[in-house]
Length: 225
Image (cartoon, rainbow, N blue to C red; front, side, top):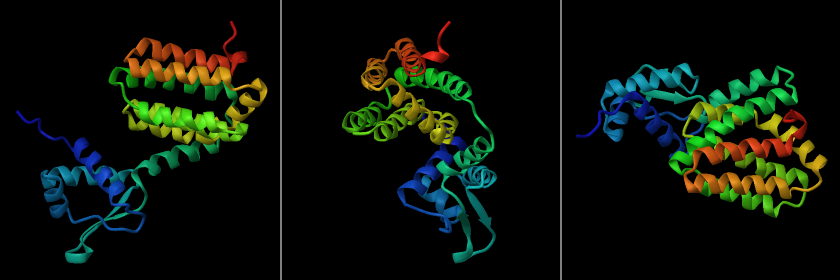
């Protein structure tokens, strides 16, 4: 029996359609009826999903017929919440411990989830290859940050991904300092390799442990007992 599609599934489809069509702010989405036909869902499901996107500030509903029907895209779905979180974080003075404690909690969970689904391996491997090719601390950290954001993405939880991306600038700042302090990226690379291997092996416990030890290697002063 085919499972009834919930509005969350419709929401994901609409977000995917926005990404695949390359829509940007100011572009208009198809009218409700047409969108329902394209996605193969009821108009009520589309209406509920659009209401959520409007609440998040992604679209602005338009009343009208013909070319004036449909909603106008205000912001990309993946940027609206991230931008809001980044604004709040930007107004706060975050200490290193706050950032690393947050990453520790999020990334252990994300790695375990990714390992359970054996998800995200390709993106993680690409980021690891970028780190291997890096010539400066800044270049290494650029790909290091991509690795950890990809780890959040692999969890399958969009809010976790948004939180990690909102932390990206702060992560980069502290990560560059950590790389320069260590003077050698070998131990960091080994940590990334271990995380990826655990995810590909489908071992949630090992993946979480690998994240914890990786962060301890990068920031030993915060993990001493």
